Image (cartoon, rainbow, N blue to C red):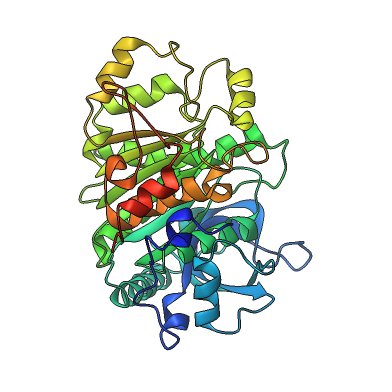
Amino acid sequence: MPSPTVFANGSLDPFGDVTEGNFEARTRLFYATDRQPAEPDDPQKSYNNARGHVLRAGVAQIASDPPLESWENARRITLAAARDRDYRLRVAGVTETGILPFSAIKYMDTPPSRAEVESAGRRFASQINAQLAQSANNDIFIYIHGYNVDFDYSTLVSSQLQHFLGYQGAFISYNWTATPSTLAYFRDQESALASRRYLRELIAFLSTHTDARRIHLIGYSAGTRLAFDAAYQIALGAEENARLGKLILIGSDLDRAYFLHAIEDGLLDAVTDLTIYQSQTDSALAMSRFVFGRKRVGETSPPGEAVPAVQAELARTPRLHVIDVTDAEEAGTGNGHWYFRSSPWASSDLFLSLLTDKDPAARGLVRASGEIIWRFPEDYPQRIKELGRFY
C-alpha cells in the first residue's frame, strides 16, 4: 500500500505519540471472527473457511519481510513518497482470548461454561481498554473485509490500515467467514448476513464494557452489507447505548433502494456520519450490477442519470457524504475496486476523515452547488498542502 499523499507531503503525521519505547505495545492488532479454528490438516494455520457459529476474539501478531529493524525506520518508510524496496507482511501467529459471552454456545457440541465465556469477555474488554489508554485517541476502529479472502489476508489489510492510522485508539479486524474463491460470491453474501448479529453484539459489548468514545465501522465491498446492516439494526432499536461513530462504505455492493429505506428509518441517527466512496471505474461493481440488474451504492452515476429529486434530497441530508474517487490518482488500478489501498489520494481522504473529523471541504474535496457528490480536484495534493498541518 503506497503512502497516502497527505503523509508524503508532510501535511499529516499520525505517529506523533508513537516511540521506540511504546511501539510494541501500541501495535497490538485485535481480531474477532466467526470462523472455525483450523484443524491440523487444514492449509490455514489459525482459522479456516468454515463458519464457527460463535465469535472468537484475540490478538494477531504481524511480521514484515524483510524486518523493519526499528520503529524510526518504519516511520521514515511510511511518511516517504517512494520506497527503496518492497516490504511484505505476514501473520506470524494469533493468541486467542476466547469465545465472547454473547455467542450462541448452546449450539456447540462441547460448549465452554458460562463462566469461561464471561471471563473471556472481561479479558478482551481489558485488553481493549489497555490499548485505548496508550493513545490520546479513545476510538475503536473496526474493519469489515470483502469476499474472496481468508483470515490471514483480511488481517493483513487491517494491519495496514491500523499502521496508517498511526496506531491511534484500538483496531479490530472483523473476520467474517468469507471464502477465498472468486466463485463464492453468492455464498459469501449469505455468510456476511449470517454474521451481522455478532457484529451488532460486538458493537454493543464494546460500548458497554470498554472506555471507547466512539466505534467506527469501515466496510469494504461485500463487507459493507454487514457493516450497514449492523448499523441499521442498531438504528431500529436492536441495541441501546451503542456508541457508533463513523460508518464508512467503500466499494459498496448495496442496493440503492435498500439504502434509501434505511435512511428513512433513521440510520443516520445511529451514527455520527455516513461516508460513501464511489467510483465510475469499479469493474467489480459493474459485474454485480449486471448480475442483480440494478446500480450499486458504490457506483457513481453518470451526469444526468441520477433522479433529480433523490439527489436534491440527499444533498440536504446532514451527516451524509458521498465521495467520487474516479479522478483520484491510481483509483482505477487493477479492477478499480480496491482504490482505498491503491490510490494515495483516496487513502489520504479516508485517514483524514477518521483522524481529524473534518468535513470533505476541509479535507480538500470540492463539489458544485446543490450537488451531493464530492470530488478530488486536479490540484488535490497542492490543495491539502495549502491547508497546512492537520495536527
